[in-house]
Length: 251
Image 1 (cartoon, rainbow, N blue to C red):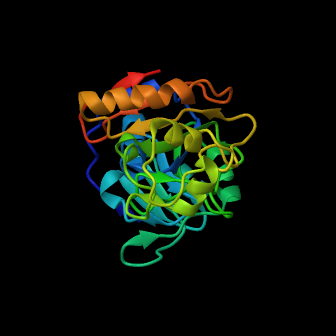
Image 2 (cartoon, rainbow, N blue to C red; image 1 turned 60 degrees about the vertical axis):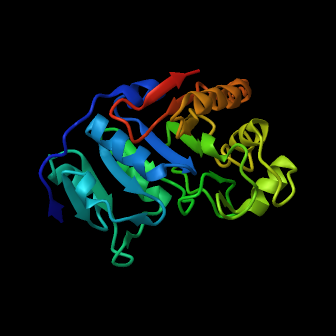
């Protein structure tokens, strides 16, 4: 277990924009800023950060980290928040994640918001999941599919897209072809993309990241126009995750 100085808590603008309530389990999937979103939400909410997949070392982003095979006991034992929970160390740079059933137990054992890394994208800007992805707990209340608006206009290659062959299958784009705002929206709202394995009772709030200029804000708006029409989507948030006030727009 490691204990750090309490992290300065920013305002709760992003958590409020997404609509996260007390005790809710939030699973983050997709690409384009998963780690910054995880860390910001955990600190805004003073909650619990955990994972169902491998996660980079994040000790500095929580007040206390517990490396344990019994996270429910750690929840009851540790009063400091934000609290990180992981089962074991995978390498010098990463922790393992829990099985989804264990994260269900964590969610059922606390009134804290539980923020879950349920996917990974190797720092790319867009992703469609492989057959074994994402790893979503059944108790998930909100799924946040992420995508960077900077991907619009980029080519469908591994440089910016994780699993480009999967994105090609969803969108109909050919490898190397330029991706449009519609292609991005189609990926986010596909059941082979951002909506894959979403529990039937979960709300879906896509987050469009890296909206850092007026042009990129317009791009986010174009993507959101299509995304928010999907019946499973509650709202769409455009954000700049590196800023002190990250919320650009809520659609």
